Image (cartoon, rainbow, N blue to C red; front, side, top):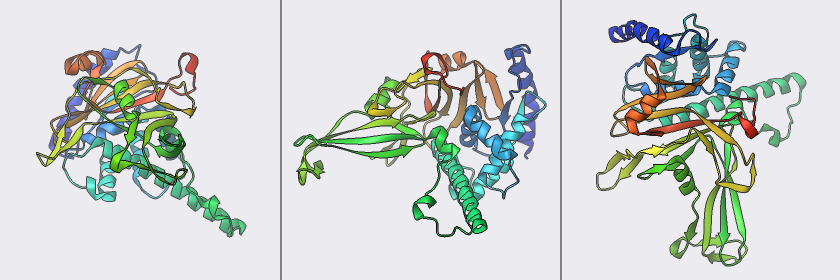
Amino acid sequence: MTVRNIASICNMGTNASALEKDIGPEQFPINEHYFGLVNFGNTCYCNSVLQALYFCRPFRENVLAYKAQQKKKENLLTCLADLFHSIATQKKKVGVIPPKKFISRLRKENDLFDNYMQQDAHEFLNYLLNTIADILQEEKKQEKQNGKLKNGNMNEPAENNKPELTWVHEIFQGTLTNETRCLNCETVSSKDEDFLDLSVDVEQNTSITHCLRDFSNTETLCSEQKYYCETCCSKQEAQKRMRVKKLPMILALHLKRFKYMEQLHRYTKLSYRVVFPLELRLFNTSSDAVNLDRMYDLVAVVVHCGSGPNRGHYITIVKSHGFWLLFDDDIVEVGMQMIVSERSGAETVFGDVCVWTFSKVGLFSHNLT
């Protein structure tokens, strides 16, 4: 740990005291901890995503449950579980923790992150969720194989060896359906595709609702892009659109702010204001969608401050027990309204990754928060 990091932790004492004072001793949530994370050289992309995930209750609970299981060989999930457990079991309510073990493991497992350059937070989120799912699936596979050896059932049908769904899938996985309608015979074909997060394009003076509407806009396939219709046995003009077939428990939405500019031969950032709702209902669903009226509450926003994908800084805004908190590496502050209004106007933010969790309020009641 460097002198700078030690100094940051010492300085956090003042911030920690201020945070407890801002929330108030009587209103401070029981058994909750608000800890900043030390930056180990441009690791804000990692810190911001970890904070967002920590305050997704279902994800945190499953990671902590994994920690409680029998000791396993070190991997990215065991390191994450150790970090979450360290935060959750602190005697202090606020402070700073160095995620050194997790960062070291991340750099060891993936060359992309094995440097001190700024990385993309969405790319890291995608890698982390898929890696955790792979670890859990491999462990289930090993458990099955050990069970077969014990019971002598080595000739189990191949279909039973398919990768099982994990709690990562149960929390984040939704399903899209790509519908294509032939304009000649009116036959509609569809193809399903699972997702752990949705990536949508952004435009000037837009909103999350508008981005999602554009995501499901109908596109006409004509001229050289004609669709081969199995019913007509020939290429025909067609219309296609993307719809949400299965809504996830937690919706992670990625705003595609980095666009490759041909004339510049590099990526540039689309620093547009995007109005985001604190509550969200998806209307771009298919006719056979599951949980059609599911309502979501905003719980976290990962924000990139800077002009390009390889420069700048990531912070996270999270909602916890009714409080909005800003996590900026080792600094934790209260007050979303101040953050939002100063950055881009009421109910607007330069967000890059937004996370909504299924609401438990009103008609759309659920056991999760």
